[in-house]
Amino acid sequence: MTTYEIFNDEILLIKPKDVITVSEALSFSMLINQVLSNKSIKYVIIDFQETAIISSAFLSALLALKKRLFDLNGEVILTSLNDKVRKILEFAEIIHLFKIFSSVEEGKNYLLNKNI
Image 1: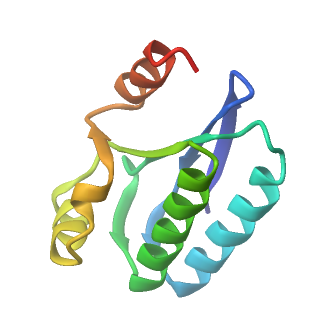
Image 2 (image 1 turned 90 degrees about the horizontal axis):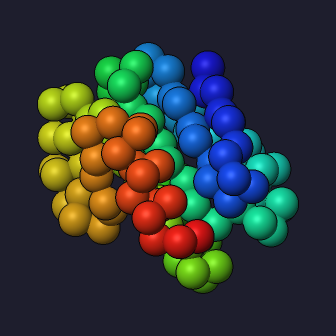
């Protein structure tokens, strides 16, 4: 199950759990569509602290989110990557597309210091 919180009306924090299967990726996409219908959200932090594995379907959803936020002059930030998730992103050759921080707090501080 994925949980989320909204900060400062512009930052969405998403916390995916365990293994992100195709079905979880679909739920993630629906959550993104629902929450981003609020036009004030321009930044998304995805906290992978409790995520063991991500599916290729999730990678597609992640890239779609990045494009959507790019079009809004926003950004996707990844935090708390474990070795497995990092290797999947590296193998897919998309890790360089995202800012990565070791914790949610670091990601939040980065965004808040951008004067969003």
